[in-house]
Each structure stands twice: as structure tokens, then as C-alpha cells.
Image (cartoon, rainbow, N blue to C red):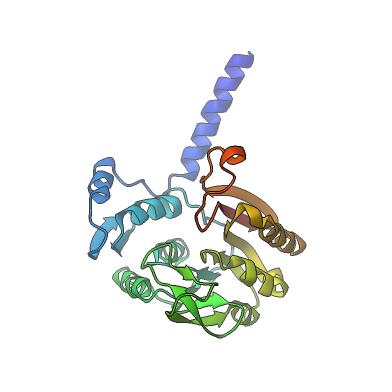
Amino acid sequence: MGLITNILQGIRKNLNGQALDARFAPIPWFTGKIIKHEDDTTLKLRNLGPISVLYKRPYELLKTYNEIFVCEIYRFDTSNTNPVIIDCGANIGISSLYFKTVYPGSTLIAFEPDQSLADIFEKNMAKNSMSNYTLHRAAVWTENGTISFDNKGSEASSIDVTGNSSFKVPTVKLGAILAGQTHIDLLKIDIEGAEYPVVQDIENELHKVEHLFIEYHGLATETYKLETILRIVSNAGFKTYIKMAADNLYMPFYQKQTGTIYDVQLNIFCYR
């Protein structure tokens, strides 16, 4: 009986997983193979599921579409017909396209400081006839102004907290944006390492947020940053679930550090 029960539980689990994953089909195998062999410099157009996407970097397209549309990592339920969604680190707009596809009545506020990515974002929103959104061509930060920026034209574009880069981008104080809202259904923060100061700065506004996503980037020697973020979201009343965003150290006791800009990359899901 124990074996039969285990088999039935496994079947039920698979069926439940299929039901959750059924809204958007994965990229067909052959299409994926074609995309993998494309160049990463020219602008290309591809129809994927419910959207048409302009993109340059094929690997980032495959990874991001699978995470956002197929796996639906940002999926949430709301009874609001006009949910407020804030997309910090919007890149070429795949996450914003997902939000507007699933929640067409939503009010979307997006931020993307890399101008080449912001250009593609605007084209993608127009290509899919999306409306009721605002794109800030700026980085979210702790104050309004300008800041050094490492402009890579990819997901790795980020604020340069060292100040070594001579390239500057405008910044917007995220706390001021949140202060102008009475309720935020989803706040997505994927800002390539700037989340530590920004989350501290918005601490007093987090009570307005129903769902909060933070992609954490840090070094193994900077565990205090992760501890601070987790303390802030816990004090704000969130439950948290953490997934590995990138598994960089296969033998952590032996390797200890990657020697790169980030050792640890985590997806932190915060909900009430």
C-alpha cells in the first residue's frame, strides 16, 4: 500500500505541476536550437507564445522567457482589476510584457537605465500594443540625481558603486515613487547589486507592498547585506521563499569565493 500511495502522490504532484505550468507553452525545441546559434549584436524579432519580442542576445531571451512566461516566477493572484506593478530593472521588457499580458488592466511603472535596453523596451511595448505604462530611463536609487553606470547593453548592466565609470545615468529615488502610491500589488527589484542600499531606503514604504521580489547579488564575505535585507522584509511582515538564481560555487568549502563581482545570486520572494 505504501508503494501505491507514493505512486499516486507522485502522479498527483505531476498533474498539479502541469496545471500550474499550463498557461504558456515552452519554446519549441527546434526554435530554441535556432535561437541559440544566433548572433548577439543585431536586433531580431521572434514570436514567442502570446508576445512578439525584439532582442539582441539570444541566450538572455531563452533564459528570461523560460523563467518569466513558462515558469511564471512572478505569478501572483489579485482581485484588483487595476493592479499597480513596479518593475525595477526592466531590461528589454519581457517581465513588463508578462505583467501586461496577464494583468492587462494594470498600471505599470518600469525603470531601465541602460539606454540601448530602454530603446528595445519601448519598441517591444509598442509591438505588442501595450498601454498604461510609464518607463523611466533611469536607475532606481536612494536619491534623485546621477550615478556612475557600467553600461553593458545586457542583463549585467549595473550601477558602478565604485565610481570608476565615467558614464553617468540619471537616478530616481524609489522611496519617493512608493510614497506616491497607496498600494503596490507587486514590486520587482532586479538591479544588479544596488538592492542593498535601495531596500534599506524604502523600508518605511514596504507596508504598502503585497508581493516583493528581490534578486540579491553579493559576496560570500558580505553576508551582513543579505541578513539586513531579510531582517527588513521580515519586519515589514513578509514571509520569504528563497531560490538560487545562479549556482556559482560547486565546492563552497574549498572554493570559498568565485573571484568575480558576485559569489551569491538569490531570488527572494516576499509575500503576505
